Length: 112
Image (cartoon, rainbow, N blue to C red; front, top):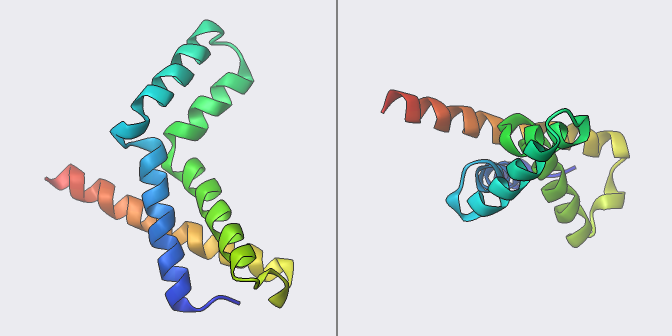
């Protein structure tokens, strides 16, 4: 099981990764190409799902947090130290921390 410090670190990384995918101008050209791709066949459920995934902080945050946690566990060699169920709970915790940071950031921007 990961420590609270590592959990906080991964939540911060998850927040930042989510911001990169959903909001940062660095990926504007990629998001524009995906949007144009979706507009060619707007009734395609698959294309709509991809656009939703990259535009939703909750959707993106879930997968970014999972990827970061899995990478952390593999790189540190701690994947086998706990049952998969524990890692699932860790995934929920990392994603929850990241989404709380995203919510705080959104509220801060709305107030300012």
